[in-house]
Structures are given as structure tokens and as C-alpha cells.
Length: 81
Image (cartoon, rainbow, N blue to C red):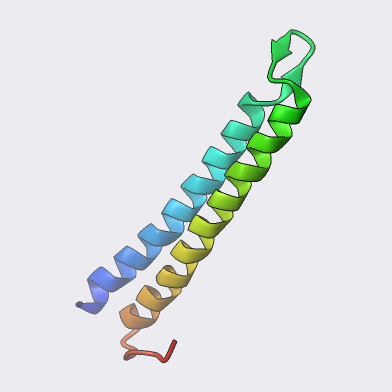
């Protein structure tokens, strides 16, 4: 992969990580219990825990791949995993 494209793909992986964090915040805000309604508190907690685990896994994978791609974009070779 040419270094220019590797750098762009690495920055894109970081952008997707930010989008996952924003989506997590939006789901957390939408699923909270309010005085006017909303979800029951127990269901809110279950939703937050489930979505947080999935989002953290996706964010960590994208950050790892983004680091690898930025390393390639700087002209570095393959690294040992």
C-alpha cells in the first residue's frame, strides 16, 4: 500500500473510533431514565453495559489498525505483532 493511502486509511480508522464514541454517547443519552418516561433504570444499565463493551472492542481494534497504518504511512515496514 502506498504511504499516502496508508496514512489516510489510518486517519480514517481514528475517525471511525471517534464516530463510535459519539454513537455510544448518543445511545447513552437516548436510553436514560427521565421523569417524563424513557427506559426503566435496570434496562438502561443493561443497555449501557452491552453497548459499551461492543464499542470499546471496536474502538480498540480501530486504534490498533490505525497505528499500524500510520506506521506504514511514515515509511516504516512491517512490524511484529
